Image (cartoon, rainbow, N blue to C red; front, side, top):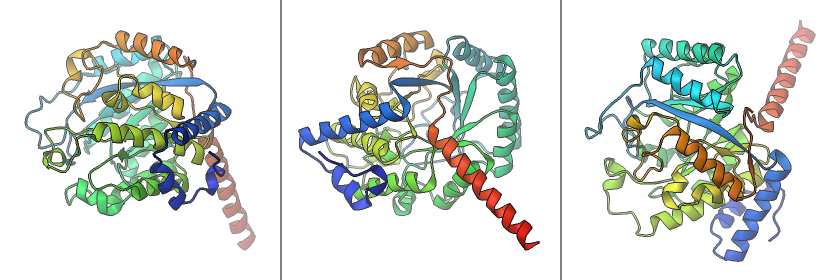
Length: 373
């Protein structure tokens, strides 16, 4: 199968490719994406150890297992000492980077707590451990405080770039424009900015997903974590009767196509092989790596908390310890002929190109102001 260069693919063409059914053409798509990945970022897989330190959340999204109104959940918050102990484990085991993740909380006490944790992690690791935050919507000053403290990546999934579909997934007080504004704030501050979408949502069309891909390209997103929609029985979205019996198979297929098309469309971006893929297939993450992904996010949350941080059901690895996940993923990566890049941040080339473009743009603005003055 012959594809145009990524930047030449239109939304209509992407929509058509997402609907491919010929197995030979689909495999050709994966191979093309893998070649592009190897060319751009090599056969290295970068680890981001996730510490899910709290499941308290002020949001009430209709798809999420830790939504505010889920009364079946035991809420928890790791102590500062537990968070730092987990961060030390990530550092000593050569992961290179970690992710601090929790439900969304907007409060000064919370902002101050995170700021302190970031500073302590930077001090503990001598500045060697990369820090990604996945802490939801915050005001710009809070984002800036955390950036100054030492966080350099931020993951804020938009879940869908269709405003109509977004509204169907959230209560009225969850604004689509608010999410977009937060992504812009993160980029303005200087974060490596990540986002992502759920794939296979009820009511979602291939055209919606093609629009998501073009959004990532248009907005200059640096890292992307796209996961299949996996229902959670404690959510309104999963309570309807509109979910097909072969949902897992369809969503796995769509997710792998999305990964491949994203790699072709934006060759120099970081793409996560999300844990949710393994909920649909025992080798779901390996399939994503072979389709163009280059990031794995092993869970390092203490085992006693994992069962209460399930955004979706059938989440893998909840009965394992961090040591178990490390060994398991090492073998999985080796099985497909790739290698783990220990003690490396694995920043995407796209970020530095975007940063260079922004620097040039600011320089042009300053020159224009000086000339006018």
